Image 1 (cartoon, rainbow, N blue to C red):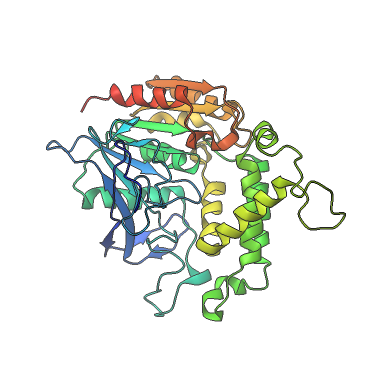
Image 2: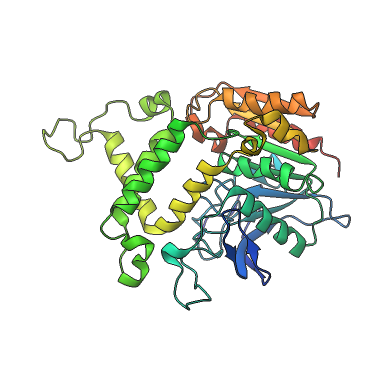
Length: 378
């Protein structure tokens, strides 16, 4: 018998799909014909339709934000500690929407979907998509759900980039933006990490130019390496040392190239697991979306000018040990908002978890988000 769900869980949830027949012109110049978005909702949309909150996902997550599936009780939503009855994003008060972005591999139209022009899977022919494209598609989902204005859009990391972009693409359709563990653009070092990950995938002999579906194979080795590299950047040195140290798996050195240290075992496990459920073509496109995000690019690099379009109030949160998206990058966002006299709250938390801190149960972090949502008028 399955254990009973906690009282603060949204409980058993059911994923849904929305179909959009109108083509979507993408930033890169391609046009995507009719597409589908997989999504989930939690809570109840109020009569005024003023309590909707969009939660945007980061690289390897999707629309399953909270709760569990009836046939997969172990598959808990990726931000279940944040979203639910009485939780910081309280579903007793808010109607929460999670969506799998275009190009994804969890139900939305992406490289694994059929290309209507050929009847075959898109594979490597699926166009590159951007944060701006995702926001445009999310706006269509909002229309489908009858949501004219979001009370808030929130996310961590790449999800926070979408929360920022919402304030620029649709300034009149968002009242609050929660930007957590993010950056206004990637540094050269971050782009370099993404490029190494992509090279691991595209040079895998089983990649076949992205058309590996037709060959009945998966570029598992490349995807595994990409995930291992990425995972290193999500954790801080202190967090790795505290969790693994230099602990030997078998107690002695092997003097070979098999696993000696527990950290090696952990990375291999994470890479192996990831390669069984995530699509390599999707990984390539999501990392490119990360690289391309730069609202200031159209304003000669001036982020203050770029953020002048925003009308929303902001909560910006960073974490001291996040060396991938360091607090200094969040402060750039805050400065640009203050330059425009926007309402912004900023919290910099001294936490040891690295970039993954936005997923953790730090009481200061959770209480800050709870307080912010508690002050949103509906």
